[in-house]
Image 1 (cartoon, rainbow, N blue to C red):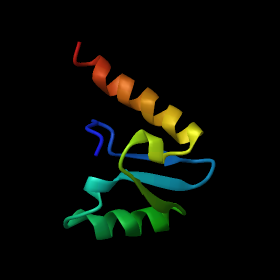
Image 2 (cartoon, helix red, strand yellow):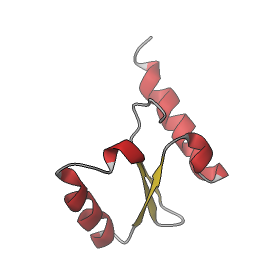
Image 3 (cartoon, helix red, strand yellow):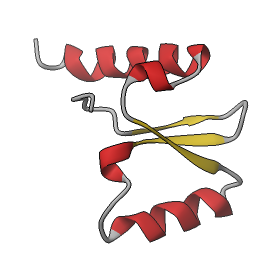
Image 4 (tube, rainbow, N blue to C red):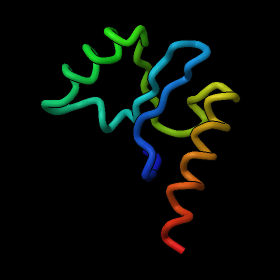
Length: 72
């Protein structure tokens, strides 16, 4: 499982909401799924960036780099 600050992000072109697999549990999952469906998204999970299609992997990496920039 990838350790990342980014645990969810949207692919607005394909209408997919990607959620890191370890966040696909607990009390909030029903709410996350319902909200995604209401907004017209399907949910797909990922364990590592390699699970993502190339364009989504690029977006994930950009978001992760931005999140980590505040640490330096």
